[in-house]
Length: 516
Ligand code: XUL
Image (tube, rainbow, N blue to C red; front, side, top):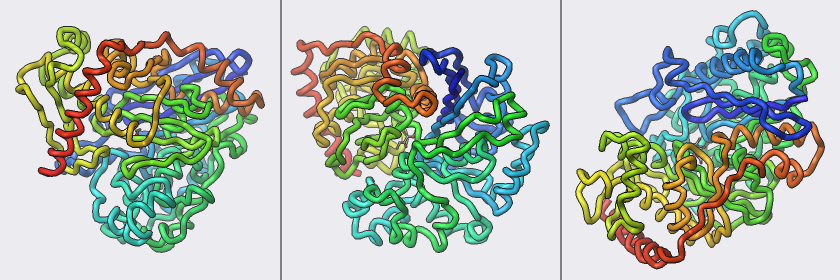
């Protein structure tokens, strides 16, 4: 028997199949949106736009990707053995659907591609994603309605943030009232894709629901004043928030037939990629921390009780029922890639540049704001280099990586997060030189997951738990622990260097933010 985990991230869709008896990975594959679905015209998974604050992606592309990966899987794995499927997706993005959506799902045919059958259901052809930062006015309006940013954070887990779904819906309803009137259903990327598998619109899980500025984190129900601050008649368009362990029933019969899945294949709600990664990295113990070095860089820590977060932080809910303290940095791999490309390097060349420079970079610093930054809030892109010039490739490579981890260190300190060990995931976590800098700057051991996409693994682990009935510790020990490599250990000799550099970084950041 097998279980299947799927993750629809910004740039790709990944599938991980586990053997339900041993928890072993039997197959994994990814589909890259730019490369494998070029007809949609995305760059790094999003649609190019002259206004850098407007970042959208075509939701039909995500549906076609799902259809393609399940078709490809059916030729590689005996899908008739799949007992359960769970999934995750990039957080916050929203999909706008007409009232024909339920009928289109109920009427899906097994013998035709999914995308063609869904083409008419969207009331908005594109979906704003987490990189969008166009909703400043809407954030202010929501915060004001709820009693200020601190009140919004207390109620929903985060102050109003540009990429969060509530502000995004508000902007759409305000600027495109006709299309909003034609919108009968709003789904997150996660609940949109879960709806396709279920053959009916399904609601949003608590984990991804906590990234909307709409859900009361205490009661896990929609917060009426937040709904009212966003748009009239919003509740009926959203569906209900649901526990991550809610059972959605079985795969839609047409899809079972199309991909050779059994009619008895059970479904769980999809969640956000970060909550899913928490499971895929084995963070099921109070105080466990992780780093996700993907398109965004994310620092998170799970705790049984609700953490006291500084204003820039978020509190989400993990599929295990724990809280997740989380900081999301928009300038993750996008910033590292920008430096690599500016100096015409490949990743080996970038790593060699890290090797030619010393920890602390002789005091040279970068504030790596290649695009608008989320933490700290930097609305207009603008990289600051301190103590060197942009042409110095070696200094630049070390400065971007050290700058990213120094910024994380400052937020961890502000939130009282003192990691004893960090598990790392994402593309850049495969680079040992980058992980050593993380260990040295954050002064704790960093262990890499050998599974590149821990969100997809986390989804598979959730499906495994549904099938096996085991507790989180048991399933994590079987399916996650074997993938965690030996740690990169912090070098005590450089602790003082980074303590000094962290102070310089904090000063430089404060000055840059003051200067605007
Ligand atoms: C988290 C966030 C990003 C996306 C990336 O708040 O916006 O990490 O989830 O997929």
